[in-house]
Image 1 (cartoon, rainbow, N blue to C red):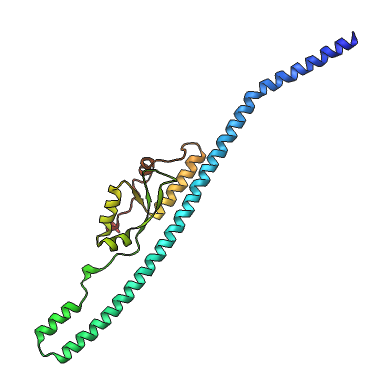
Image 2 (cartoon, rainbow, N blue to C red; image 1 turned 90 degrees about the horizontal axis):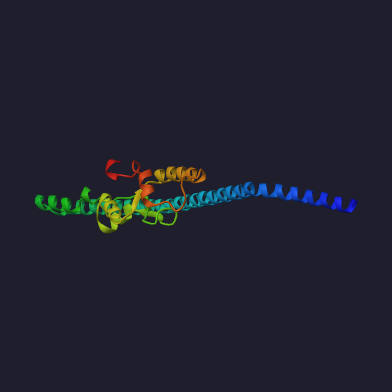
Length: 209
């Protein structure tokens, strides 16, 4: 009898433990789900920070390239001006025709309308949103290549479905998105439309600078 009673007592203990474990399962499921969500949020926040770092590197490289292009352009302008002054001096020295000298002077002077733009590099965000459809574009370089104003180039890019924002606006945007992702208010990918709402007041306008 003692053996049977001991067996029943042991079974009762096991049953009690099983009941405790069963009652703990929902709590464990909730904890696991919460941790999975936290890890996903951290992973997405890390993805945004990596994107920001990559974009900043691209902006730094493009800005450096623009400074180099401006320097070369300035040197070419200086050489052109010196040559023009020398030629103008020679013409005035050897020519007694004042009209010819005046005409030569006008032809050798570079009109201000030919000033070329340099230095405007922006972040673009395409229809795929963040983080997959973002990069940098040198507005000034495209303006020089197409012989158009920077504002025209920007308008053409926007009409093609891209958002354009400055480096400062992009950095503020990423900080906000990282916070929202960590708090569970947003998930990746973040659509272009959502980004547009967040940056509506931060779009660049070179004509206002």
